Length: 328
Image (cartoon, rainbow, N blue to C red; front, side):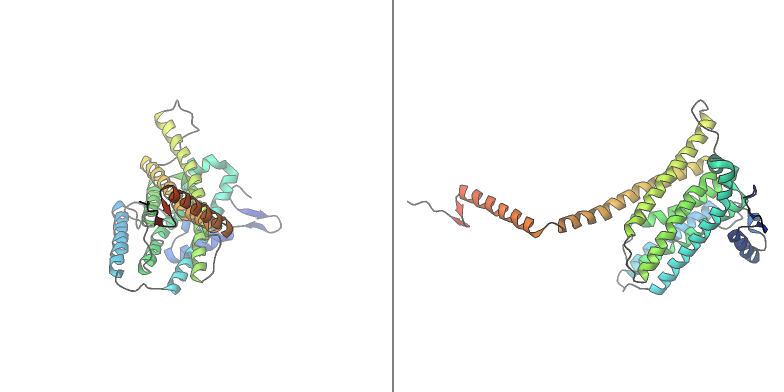
């Protein structure tokens, strides 16, 4: 591997990694300029301002909860074909973006190490900014997840209706804040989404998947890792900027607002997903445990209860449900 990130084969010269080359070809055909020349400019790039982001979130809430009221006295819509297309598309899109991220990051991590890539310029290269922006746009596509739940008249939980728009807001603040550590939660999230949307696609096909619970476990692990990196980056920035006597490595790139939003939103995700896991899977586990008690054990317990009741009844003057009358 060369210093510029290309892979070499001695017998045939330099061979560029195929995914980015193919992506760049498609991007150039559509946009008219190479992918690494994209610039995220607030006020010029689509969905790059607070009013645009807030408007999308308000529209989401209006459609979802207004639609729920509209569907209240109507039959649920199946839309299974569209649901399968939606989930397969997001599976492939997430997987494609993940491959492009790995292609960009692997040579940089090998060459310059982890710290430079989460706090330095390596985490904010021109190709990565392009990928950050595309990942950000996918968060608006993922809002359609809730629309499917609404028209199918499935429960709209707080976790779901909060998590989706909050993730779009999170991605926006990190783009506007130039946070080099962004690739860590993004790549982990893309990994989870490949698994999650593939599960939804298979379920829509009628395939029973045994590892549903592991998706939530994977999400919780993702947030724990995310927060480890983000708390470190925030500490490093704070210590270097405001308390240089505290131990730190250097100064991580990014704006304070982006750091605060990252900490608050991802911390809330961890709490909510842990609560969801306990409420959903631990209760199921307890019910299975109770259902698995042998019948003879249940019979013995019932017999013991009946014996105890008879003893109590005899003491209080009741035998076989009738009161003993005192003879005159």
